[in-house]
Length: 229
Image (cartoon, rainbow, N blue to C red; front, side, top):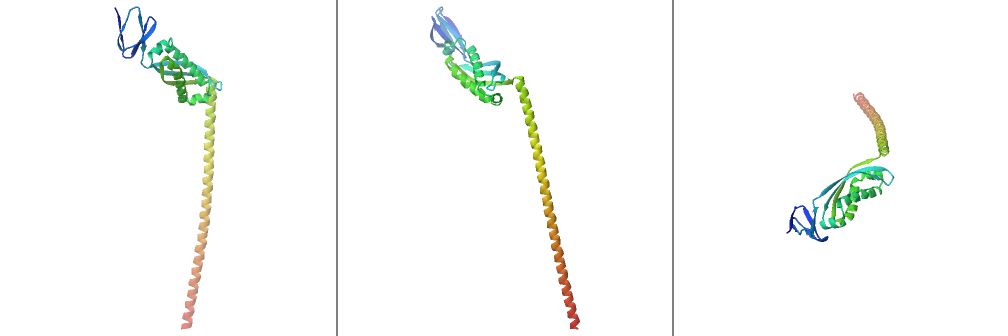
């Protein structure tokens, strides 16, 4: 007499005979010898571990709450059953301690501004530990980072001061540019005025010269007429 079990496409059966590992079966029909064989089903699909907010202390002693998601799958059913008692619980605990270790090496500003870098560091560190359990960590995504209240208040004041500073700089730059524009306008006006005065003098001189020439020519013609008669 045999026990016949159906192992689904996404499952594997780790078989033990009298407590000794004899192989991994599936998918399909798996035949077990009653009282001698025992099979442990392992789900090979990608799993999503939704971790609640974890409190961590940054390098500059700021307390932040971080919740994240772990995407993982079993790549070696034998190792997942034999090398660890409960691989899901083990990964949850490992993910929490790894998160606190990574956050403890950086400042609160880096935590808030380098989310993608933290995700990558978490994945690398966690993957290095879970490989012995036959589990592959595919990705880790931080969903929300919440600093403690006094840190949030300090950041708000800092942002307000920074905005005020930028506004003052922008205003002073505007005043400076306006002053430059006014000076340039006055300069151009003076140049145009002096150019106009010079042109006017030249025209007056030319007019006087031409008048004198005409006057001399008229005088000469008059003399010629007087003495020619």
